[in-house]
Image 1 (cartoon, helix red, strand yellow):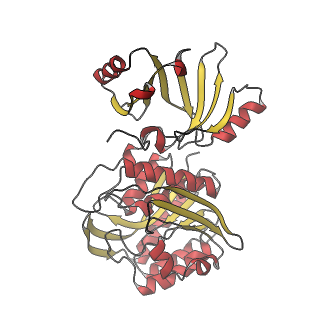
Image 2: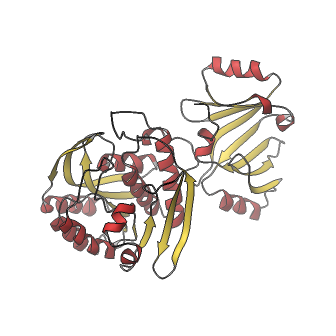
Image 3: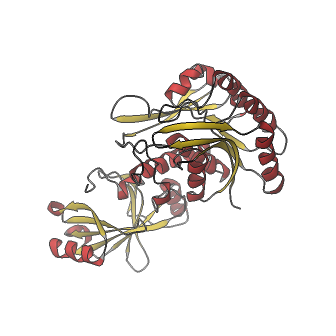
Length: 381
Protein backbone atom coordinates (compact mmCIF):
# COMPACT_ATOMS: atom_id res chain seq x y z
CA UNK A 1 0.00 0.00 0.00
CA UNK A 2 1.23 3.49 -0.79
CA UNK A 3 2.57 5.27 2.29
CA UNK A 4 0.29 8.14 3.32
CA UNK A 5 2.08 11.18 4.74
CA UNK A 6 0.19 14.13 6.19
CA UNK A 7 2.24 17.33 6.07
CA UNK A 8 1.23 20.14 8.42
CA UNK A 9 3.24 23.20 7.45
CA UNK A 10 3.27 26.60 5.81
CA UNK A 11 3.29 27.38 2.11
CA UNK A 12 6.40 28.87 0.45
CA UNK A 13 5.39 30.90 -2.60
CA UNK A 14 8.93 30.52 -3.96
CA UNK A 15 8.65 26.73 -3.93
CA UNK A 16 11.91 26.17 -2.07
CA UNK A 17 10.76 25.18 1.41
CA UNK A 18 7.57 24.48 3.33
CA UNK A 19 4.71 22.51 1.84
CA UNK A 20 6.23 22.68 -1.63
CA UNK A 21 9.53 21.07 -0.59
CA UNK A 22 7.64 18.55 1.54
CA UNK A 23 5.47 17.38 -1.34
CA UNK A 24 8.47 17.03 -3.64
CA UNK A 25 10.39 14.93 -1.10
CA UNK A 26 7.51 12.57 -0.29
CA UNK A 27 6.57 12.18 -3.95
CA UNK A 28 10.11 11.43 -5.12
CA UNK A 29 10.48 8.81 -2.37
CA UNK A 30 7.31 7.00 -3.40
CA UNK A 31 4.81 8.23 -0.82
CA UNK A 32 1.49 10.05 -1.14
CA UNK A 33 1.64 13.59 0.27
CA UNK A 34 -1.40 15.20 1.89
CA UNK A 35 -1.39 18.69 3.36
CA UNK A 36 -2.83 20.86 6.09
CA UNK A 37 -1.54 24.35 5.40
CA UNK A 38 -0.93 26.42 8.55
CA UNK A 39 0.21 29.68 6.96
CA UNK A 40 0.58 31.36 3.60
CA UNK A 41 3.81 33.22 3.02
CA UNK A 42 4.98 35.70 0.43
CA UNK A 43 8.49 34.37 0.07
CA UNK A 44 11.36 34.06 -2.39
CA UNK A 45 15.06 33.25 -2.28
CA UNK A 46 15.83 36.61 -0.66
CA UNK A 47 13.50 36.32 2.30
CA UNK A 48 9.97 36.32 3.65
CA UNK A 49 7.98 39.42 2.75
CA UNK A 50 4.72 38.44 4.43
CA UNK A 51 3.06 35.76 6.58
CA UNK A 52 -0.68 35.13 6.80
CA UNK A 53 -1.63 32.45 9.37
CA UNK A 54 -4.47 30.11 8.46
CA UNK A 55 -7.18 30.02 11.18
CA UNK A 56 -6.82 27.07 13.53
CA UNK A 57 -10.27 25.74 12.68
CA UNK A 58 -9.32 25.56 8.99
CA UNK A 59 -6.07 23.74 9.79
CA UNK A 60 -8.02 21.14 11.77
CA UNK A 61 -10.64 20.88 9.01
CA UNK A 62 -7.93 19.98 6.50
CA UNK A 63 -6.61 17.27 8.84
CA UNK A 64 -10.08 15.86 9.51
CA UNK A 65 -10.85 15.77 5.80
CA UNK A 66 -7.91 13.63 4.75
CA UNK A 67 -7.75 11.49 7.90
CA UNK A 68 -11.41 10.46 7.63
CA UNK A 69 -11.14 9.41 3.99
CA UNK A 70 -7.57 8.55 2.96
CA UNK A 71 -5.95 7.71 6.27
CA UNK A 72 -2.53 8.69 7.65
CA UNK A 73 0.58 6.56 8.25
CA UNK A 74 2.93 9.36 9.29
CA UNK A 75 2.73 13.06 10.04
CA UNK A 76 5.31 15.76 9.47
CA UNK A 77 4.89 19.10 11.22
CA UNK A 78 6.86 22.11 10.06
CA UNK A 79 5.94 25.78 10.31
CA UNK A 80 2.98 26.46 12.62
CA UNK A 81 1.01 29.67 12.24
CA UNK A 82 0.22 30.34 15.91
CA UNK A 83 0.39 29.08 19.48
CA UNK A 84 -3.33 28.32 19.30
CA UNK A 85 -2.77 26.06 16.29
CA UNK A 86 0.19 24.31 17.97
CA UNK A 87 -1.92 23.44 21.03
CA UNK A 88 -4.84 22.29 18.88
CA UNK A 89 -2.55 20.10 16.78
CA UNK A 90 -1.15 18.35 19.85
CA UNK A 91 -4.67 17.49 20.97
CA UNK A 92 -5.91 16.45 17.52
CA UNK A 93 -2.92 14.22 16.79
CA UNK A 94 -3.47 12.32 20.04
CA UNK A 95 -6.97 11.25 19.05
CA UNK A 96 -7.47 7.55 18.14
CA UNK A 97 -7.52 7.92 14.33
CA UNK A 98 -4.09 9.59 14.31
CA UNK A 99 -2.48 8.38 17.55
CA UNK A 100 -0.66 5.51 15.80
CA UNK A 101 0.79 7.69 13.02
CA UNK A 102 4.53 8.34 13.41
CA UNK A 103 5.10 12.05 14.02
CA UNK A 104 8.19 13.89 12.81
CA UNK A 105 8.32 17.37 14.34
CA UNK A 106 10.54 19.94 12.63
CA UNK A 107 10.22 22.98 14.92
CA UNK A 108 10.56 25.67 12.28
CA UNK A 109 11.41 29.03 13.87
CA UNK A 110 13.71 30.82 11.45
CA UNK A 111 13.95 30.52 7.66
CA UNK A 112 17.31 29.96 5.94
CA UNK A 113 17.22 33.64 4.96
CA UNK A 114 16.98 34.63 8.66
CA UNK A 115 13.28 35.55 8.69
CA UNK A 116 11.48 34.73 11.97
CA UNK A 117 8.61 32.26 11.46
CA UNK A 118 7.55 31.54 15.07
CA UNK A 119 6.96 33.91 18.00
CA UNK A 120 7.76 33.14 21.64
CA UNK A 121 4.24 31.95 22.44
CA UNK A 122 4.31 29.48 19.55
CA UNK A 123 7.72 28.16 20.63
CA UNK A 124 6.35 27.64 24.16
CA UNK A 125 3.44 25.68 22.68
CA UNK A 126 5.88 23.36 20.88
CA UNK A 127 6.35 21.41 24.10
CA UNK A 128 2.98 19.64 23.75
CA UNK A 129 3.98 18.53 20.25
CA UNK A 130 7.32 17.21 21.53
CA UNK A 131 5.33 15.03 23.94
CA UNK A 132 3.54 13.47 20.94
CA UNK A 133 6.48 13.28 18.51
CA UNK A 134 8.50 10.19 17.63
CA UNK A 135 11.44 12.36 16.60
CA UNK A 136 12.26 16.07 16.61
CA UNK A 137 14.60 17.52 13.97
CA UNK A 138 15.68 21.01 15.06
CA UNK A 139 18.71 22.79 13.66
CA UNK A 140 21.20 24.11 16.20
CA UNK A 141 19.61 27.55 16.78
CA UNK A 142 16.18 25.91 17.12
CA UNK A 143 17.57 23.35 19.55
CA UNK A 144 18.99 26.16 21.69
CA UNK A 145 15.61 27.94 21.68
CA UNK A 146 13.98 24.71 22.90
CA UNK A 147 16.37 24.52 25.86
CA UNK A 148 19.00 22.13 24.51
CA UNK A 149 19.32 18.38 24.12
CA UNK A 150 18.22 17.29 27.58
CA UNK A 151 15.18 19.56 27.51
CA UNK A 152 13.96 17.99 24.27
CA UNK A 153 14.76 14.42 25.33
CA UNK A 154 12.80 14.99 28.55
CA UNK A 155 9.65 14.82 26.40
CA UNK A 156 10.40 11.20 25.55
CA UNK A 157 10.94 11.69 21.82
CA UNK A 158 14.05 10.91 19.82
CA UNK A 159 16.20 13.88 18.81
CA UNK A 160 18.07 14.35 15.55
CA UNK A 161 20.64 17.08 16.15
CA UNK A 162 21.40 18.55 12.73
CA UNK A 163 24.87 19.96 12.27
CA UNK A 164 24.35 22.10 9.20
CA UNK A 165 24.62 25.35 11.16
CA UNK A 166 27.89 24.34 12.84
CA UNK A 167 31.31 25.45 11.62
CA UNK A 168 33.73 23.21 9.73
CA UNK A 169 34.05 21.28 6.51
CA UNK A 170 32.30 18.19 7.91
CA UNK A 171 28.60 18.12 8.73
CA UNK A 172 27.76 15.87 11.69
CA UNK A 173 24.20 14.78 12.44
CA UNK A 174 23.52 12.89 15.69
CA UNK A 175 20.55 10.77 16.74
CA UNK A 176 19.87 10.81 20.49
CA UNK A 177 17.44 8.71 22.52
CA UNK A 178 16.05 9.36 26.00
CA UNK A 179 18.14 7.53 28.59
CA UNK A 180 20.66 6.30 26.00
CA UNK A 181 22.29 9.41 24.63
CA UNK A 182 23.78 9.23 21.16
CA UNK A 183 22.78 6.05 19.31
CA UNK A 184 23.88 6.96 15.78
CA UNK A 185 25.79 9.63 13.92
CA UNK A 186 26.42 10.52 10.31
CA UNK A 187 29.37 12.53 8.99
CA UNK A 188 29.77 13.87 5.46
CA UNK A 189 31.67 16.66 3.68
CA UNK A 190 29.85 19.98 3.65
CA UNK A 191 28.31 20.79 0.25
CA UNK A 192 29.27 24.39 -0.49
CA UNK A 193 26.22 25.94 -2.15
CA UNK A 194 23.95 28.94 -1.52
CA UNK A 195 21.03 26.91 -2.86
CA UNK A 196 20.07 25.19 0.37
CA UNK A 197 16.60 26.61 0.98
CA UNK A 198 14.32 23.90 2.36
CA UNK A 199 16.91 21.46 3.68
CA UNK A 200 15.17 21.03 7.03
CA UNK A 201 11.70 20.67 5.50
CA UNK A 202 12.95 18.15 2.97
CA UNK A 203 14.83 16.10 5.56
CA UNK A 204 11.89 15.88 7.97
CA UNK A 205 9.41 14.95 5.24
CA UNK A 206 11.77 12.34 3.83
CA UNK A 207 12.09 10.81 7.31
CA UNK A 208 8.31 10.81 7.70
CA UNK A 209 7.94 9.08 4.33
CA UNK A 210 10.39 6.37 5.40
CA UNK A 211 8.51 5.81 8.66
CA UNK A 212 5.22 5.65 6.76
CA UNK A 213 6.78 2.98 4.53
CA UNK A 214 7.62 0.86 7.57
CA UNK A 215 11.31 1.74 7.91
CA UNK A 216 12.86 1.91 11.40
CA UNK A 217 13.90 5.41 12.44
CA UNK A 218 17.67 5.09 11.90
CA UNK A 219 17.54 3.84 8.27
CA UNK A 220 14.75 6.33 7.54
CA UNK A 221 17.09 9.12 8.67
CA UNK A 222 20.02 7.68 6.68
CA UNK A 223 17.96 7.57 3.47
CA UNK A 224 16.56 11.05 4.11
CA UNK A 225 20.07 12.45 4.53
CA UNK A 226 21.15 10.92 1.23
CA UNK A 227 18.09 12.42 -0.45
CA UNK A 228 18.86 15.88 0.94
CA UNK A 229 22.51 15.71 -0.12
CA UNK A 230 21.61 14.64 -3.64
CA UNK A 231 19.02 17.43 -3.79
CA UNK A 232 21.73 19.91 -2.82
CA UNK A 233 24.04 18.59 -5.53
CA UNK A 234 21.18 18.82 -8.04
CA UNK A 235 20.08 22.36 -7.13
CA UNK A 236 19.02 24.21 -10.30
CA UNK A 237 20.53 27.56 -9.27
CA UNK A 238 17.33 29.61 -9.26
CA UNK A 239 16.93 33.02 -7.65
CA UNK A 240 19.30 35.67 -6.36
CA UNK A 241 19.64 34.41 -2.79
CA UNK A 242 19.14 31.12 -0.94
CA UNK A 243 17.79 29.13 -3.89
CA UNK A 244 15.74 25.92 -3.89
CA UNK A 245 17.24 22.45 -4.00
CA UNK A 246 16.69 19.97 -6.82
CA UNK A 247 14.51 17.24 -5.29
CA UNK A 248 12.97 16.64 -8.70
CA UNK A 249 16.34 15.60 -10.16
CA UNK A 250 17.22 12.88 -7.64
CA UNK A 251 17.30 9.63 -9.62
CA UNK A 252 18.53 6.06 -9.22
CA UNK A 253 20.77 6.64 -6.25
CA UNK A 254 20.24 3.71 -3.92
CA UNK A 255 17.49 5.39 -1.92
CA UNK A 256 15.27 2.31 -2.05
CA UNK A 257 15.83 -1.11 -0.54
CA UNK A 258 15.07 -2.94 -3.77
CA UNK A 259 17.74 -3.31 -6.48
CA UNK A 260 18.13 -0.56 -9.05
CA UNK A 261 20.01 -1.24 -12.29
CA UNK A 262 21.77 2.07 -12.63
CA UNK A 263 25.43 1.50 -13.53
CA UNK A 264 27.27 -0.59 -16.14
CA UNK A 265 31.01 -0.80 -16.74
CA UNK A 266 32.16 -1.75 -20.22
CA UNK A 267 35.66 -2.82 -21.33
CA UNK A 268 37.64 -0.47 -23.56
CA UNK A 269 40.81 -0.75 -25.63
CA UNK A 270 41.52 2.91 -26.42
CA UNK A 271 40.61 5.39 -23.69
CA UNK A 272 40.46 8.54 -25.82
CA UNK A 273 38.49 6.89 -28.61
CA UNK A 274 35.91 5.44 -26.19
CA UNK A 275 35.51 8.74 -24.32
CA UNK A 276 34.95 10.60 -27.58
CA UNK A 277 32.42 7.99 -28.72
CA UNK A 278 30.22 8.17 -25.62
CA UNK A 279 30.31 11.95 -25.64
CA UNK A 280 29.20 11.85 -29.26
CA UNK A 281 26.36 9.49 -28.31
CA UNK A 282 25.14 12.22 -25.95
CA UNK A 283 26.25 11.09 -22.48
CA UNK A 284 27.74 13.62 -20.04
CA UNK A 285 31.22 12.75 -18.80
CA UNK A 286 31.43 13.10 -15.01
CA UNK A 287 34.72 11.27 -14.22
CA UNK A 288 37.92 11.54 -16.26
CA UNK A 289 40.80 9.36 -15.06
CA UNK A 290 42.99 8.51 -18.07
CA UNK A 291 45.82 7.36 -15.79
CA UNK A 292 43.53 4.59 -14.52
CA UNK A 293 41.91 4.04 -17.89
CA UNK A 294 38.56 4.89 -16.31
CA UNK A 295 35.79 7.30 -17.30
CA UNK A 296 32.20 7.59 -16.10
CA UNK A 297 29.26 9.09 -17.96
CA UNK A 298 25.77 10.12 -16.91
CA UNK A 299 22.53 9.79 -18.86
CA UNK A 300 19.62 12.22 -18.61
CA UNK A 301 17.75 9.93 -16.18
CA UNK A 302 20.71 9.70 -13.78
CA UNK A 303 21.89 6.23 -14.86
CA UNK A 304 25.67 5.99 -15.26
CA UNK A 305 27.93 4.07 -17.62
CA UNK A 306 31.68 3.59 -17.23
CA UNK A 307 34.47 2.46 -19.50
CA UNK A 308 37.63 0.83 -18.15
CA UNK A 309 40.80 -0.02 -20.00
CA UNK A 310 42.83 -2.86 -18.48
CA UNK A 311 42.49 -5.95 -16.35
CA UNK A 312 39.52 -4.64 -14.40
CA UNK A 313 37.18 -5.40 -17.29
CA UNK A 314 39.17 -7.90 -19.31
CA UNK A 315 36.43 -10.48 -18.95
CA UNK A 316 33.65 -8.25 -20.29
CA UNK A 317 31.00 -5.93 -18.93
CA UNK A 318 29.93 -5.65 -15.29
CA UNK A 319 26.35 -4.77 -14.38
CA UNK A 320 25.78 -2.90 -11.11
CA UNK A 321 22.65 -3.28 -9.00
CA UNK A 322 22.33 -0.77 -6.15
CA UNK A 323 20.38 -1.05 -2.92
CA UNK A 324 20.04 1.24 0.06
CA UNK A 325 20.08 -1.89 2.25
CA UNK A 326 23.03 -3.70 0.66
CA UNK A 327 24.17 -5.80 3.61
CA UNK A 328 20.69 -7.09 4.42
CA UNK A 329 20.10 -7.90 0.75
CA UNK A 330 23.36 -9.82 0.40
CA UNK A 331 22.74 -11.71 3.65
CA UNK A 332 19.28 -12.68 2.42
CA UNK A 333 20.69 -14.01 -0.88
CA UNK A 334 23.56 -15.85 0.82
CA UNK A 335 21.15 -17.67 3.12
CA UNK A 336 19.36 -18.91 0.02
CA UNK A 337 22.45 -20.36 -1.59
CA UNK A 338 23.70 -17.51 -3.78
CA UNK A 339 27.49 -17.68 -3.89
CA UNK A 340 29.48 -14.45 -3.67
CA UNK A 341 33.05 -13.90 -4.82
CA UNK A 342 33.25 -10.86 -2.55
CA UNK A 343 31.00 -10.09 0.39
CA UNK A 344 30.13 -6.42 1.08
CA UNK A 345 33.31 -4.39 1.36
CA UNK A 346 34.03 -0.67 1.57
CA UNK A 347 36.07 0.40 -1.45
CA UNK A 348 38.48 3.34 -1.58
CA UNK A 349 36.28 5.20 -4.08
CA UNK A 350 33.44 5.43 -1.56
CA UNK A 351 31.24 2.55 -2.73
CA UNK A 352 30.38 -0.56 -0.74
CA UNK A 353 30.43 -3.58 -3.04
CA UNK A 354 29.69 -7.29 -3.17
CA UNK A 355 30.60 -9.26 -6.30
CA UNK A 356 29.27 -12.42 -7.94
CA UNK A 357 28.54 -14.00 -11.32
CA UNK A 358 25.24 -15.11 -12.80
CA UNK A 359 24.67 -18.71 -14.10
CA UNK A 360 26.04 -17.74 -17.51
CA UNK A 361 29.21 -16.24 -16.05
CA UNK A 362 28.23 -12.60 -16.46
CA UNK A 363 29.66 -10.40 -13.75
CA UNK A 364 27.45 -8.57 -11.29
CA UNK A 365 28.24 -6.07 -8.57
CA UNK A 366 25.71 -5.44 -5.83
CA UNK A 367 26.61 -2.14 -4.26
CA UNK A 368 25.67 1.00 -2.35
CA UNK A 369 27.06 4.37 -3.37
CA UNK A 370 24.31 7.01 -3.00
CA UNK A 371 25.76 10.42 -3.91
CA UNK A 372 29.20 9.02 -4.79
CA UNK A 373 27.96 7.38 -7.99
CA UNK A 374 26.95 10.64 -9.66
CA UNK A 375 28.77 13.07 -7.38
CA UNK A 376 32.13 11.57 -6.38
CA UNK A 377 34.67 13.98 -4.90
CA UNK A 378 36.54 13.95 -8.21
CA UNK A 379 33.50 14.69 -10.40
CA UNK A 380 34.33 16.95 -13.34
CA UNK A 381 33.26 20.51 -12.50
